[in-house]
Length: 157
Image (tube, rainbow, N blue to C red):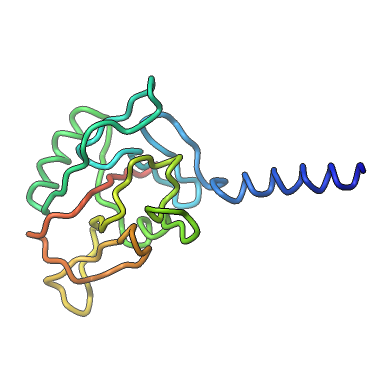
């Protein structure tokens, strides 16, 4: 009987740690221990509610010109400097086993299951930038900077 109890208890703790052991929830942002960065919890256009423990509002898609303006505002309102994530950083948020959007919905609630911008150009075709699609969990280097995609900002720790 004790062996079964400890097996269940150990399974519970190891499962909990594997899901988000690399992340620390800090309210409106999430500390990424592995990449040594901090993510805004909500997609651009949304606002974190401590009361509801959720991202409120509608996420908005931005092109690169609008991203520059949004970063200026963000860096004035919330101590930065905030930036677009690299491809590797954004890919690290992909959760292949997650239902719906391929991202941890507890750490990053209300994330659209769609492509998000990265800061990296496609080295094979430099007029295009890489994006990470949270519907498929795959990366694509096929969007021009004038295209509007969703954005999640990050800052270095």
